[in-house]
Length: 399
Ligand SMILES: Cc1ncc(COP(=O)(O)O)c(C=O)c1O
Image 1 (cartoon, rainbow, N blue to C red):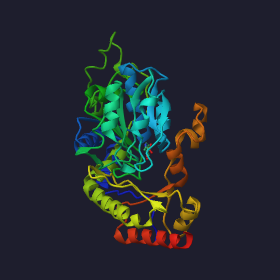
Image 2 (image 1 turned 30 degrees about the vertical axis):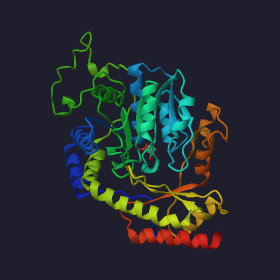
Image 3 (image 1 turned 180 degrees about the vertical axis):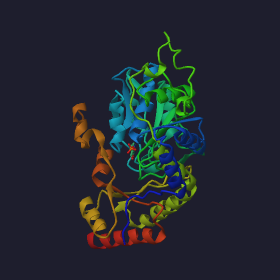
């Protein structure tokens, strides 16, 4: 049996839209991107959403908004030490310094008890990551943010369908960033999207994704054939608003072909989500018998986990290596990925920040002992049972 890590569903609707788009030759960001944004915002239950090129850009642009609200280049953003490296990269790409906090080993998420000691006069925002779709402890995070007047930006790249105390993940802070990369529950192949209830933030993001331009209308009339924009030559001394750049921007627009894939995916969302959720909860339940050699995350009563993938962590007392386990799984057709790394101490690119191994013990432990595997919509109970059988066979020989 083969259990690939990811899959993507390209629907009939997407194929028809793509062929229409190719016929009309209107390929760059236009009406389908607007439609995707509108439907995405409705799905999560927010007022605004802005589609961009990648999930990493979604993180970076959400952060770059803060320059319009008093932040300065070189200010600090608090992030968990353990995440996909994009989280730390995005903070640096936005011109801020990431300040890392260790995670809780059981939840994989930032440990709120360790946040306050990292707050300085230069801290501007907390950026929790809902790793593997497990909601971060948002009550504690928001309480700290309020106490120190910090923004909260959720990195919800992996958290489609996650619910925290009755509220959708993505609606719990000032802004949230999702990835639309192929392995994710909603995909535009490559892509990202920022959601918020704040119209001012959304306007600024629209400017940021297009080089920091002064024009930031929700829907651009110039996208329509030979339309006239009344605002165009009314900026300042009758300058062309499209060539006035108010802030340091990015080049990060989504195109119509990507939006067409996304619109098809949105129609399948509930189906994909429920298949994946069934797989995730099934595996979480079945893997319990392998404790303490192999553990996963737990589902708390107040939450739904966004079924991104199935995380597996090798227990402290197990006397086999991760490589031995992953080699066995791969030989038996199961794709594996590591469960990321402690960005500051296990990703050499971050060495210049001066952290040292041992600074983030929980993140480093997971960085050495964690993996994740696919639970996507092309997998069902039979494949999940196979995964359990393979692990069982491995443990029989190795404990
Ligand atoms: C936690 C997290 N943040 C950010 C990203 C970046 O997304 P992208 O790959 O679309 O740039 C990812 C990617 O999957 C992620 O897992």
